[in-house]
Amino acid sequence: MSTRYNSVLANARVLVLGGSSGIGFCVAEHALASGAIVTISSSRQSKLDNALERLKASVPHSSANIDGQICDLSNLDSTRSNLETLLKSVTSTQLLDHIVFTAGDGIKIRPVADLEVETIQQMGHVRFFGPMLLGGLAKTYMSPSKTSSITLTSGTNITKPGKGWTAVAGYGAGTEGIARGLAVDLAPIRVNCVSPGAVHTEMFDDIPSDRLPSVLSNFRKRSLTDSVGTPEELSEAYIYLMRCSFATGSLIEVHGGSLLA
Image (tube, rainbow, N blue to C red; front, top):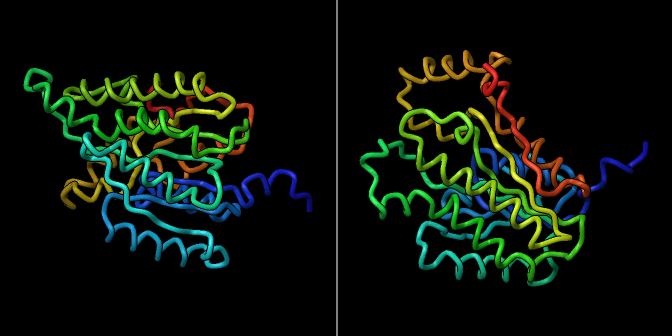
């Protein structure tokens, strides 16, 4: 059988920021299963250790190709230095081919009238400033080729925000702008963005168990597929953007048709 298509990521070096859970975990798992050499990062050692154990169990034949690093992006004063430390460590022997950014601040919905400058800034420490600072550092640590890529993450709440989502939607729209700007600034390295809709990840664990069925039902009703996305499904978009060397400055929306419903 031809390996022309299924070997594109073989031995590619991939860094997934936010790879210890949710979409990032499944992107790491998918890349690992595709033959890539993967490093995931997380802000907490316990989450990182747990994710590494799960990945090694899931793709045992590639367990030697997975590693993890701590990188805390929550403090803006140390974000750049923490990112630089991470990138230096991961590329001590070889440059990166792909970086995926799925890390995010905890989403706290607040009426726009209640927002103060400090609160607004805190809501974007990871989701906005993280990708921006990463983009400023990445070129030094990546192979300078069209086969290299950075993939950021926004969300469909940018296009169809609910009440109280103004700050989150603003930062998400900014992330998409960062992706387009970096595609120009970092060329030939490609930069793209994935915009997920409702995806059933560990973030739903914060919803009381008695309310969860109703919440999921409401999300299903807002889609054309009568479903809520899974992180495994979302990983397909990220893998595509890594594999397709003609895709840059692109936005992929994965939302089950919820923007049309």
